[in-house]
Figure 1 (cartoon, rainbow, N blue to C red):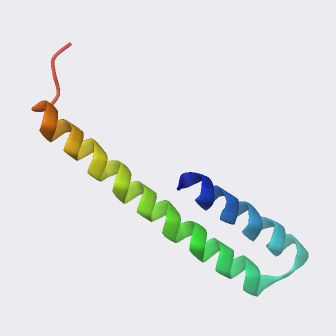
Figure 2 (figure 1 turned 90 degrees about the horizontal axis):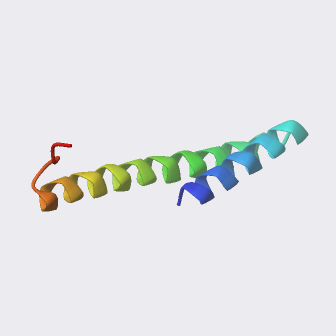
Length: 59
């Protein structure tokens, strides 16, 4: 999912260089949404992992 966020970010950059502001805005919006979805899933996965393991283990 982070891959798609980066792809849309690159598309937004290229579109901005060529002056297609509508396309750049759309691609940047999609990239931002995918980025935040990825962050939410990453945090949720880390919390689930900690709960299932019983917390952090001492080294």
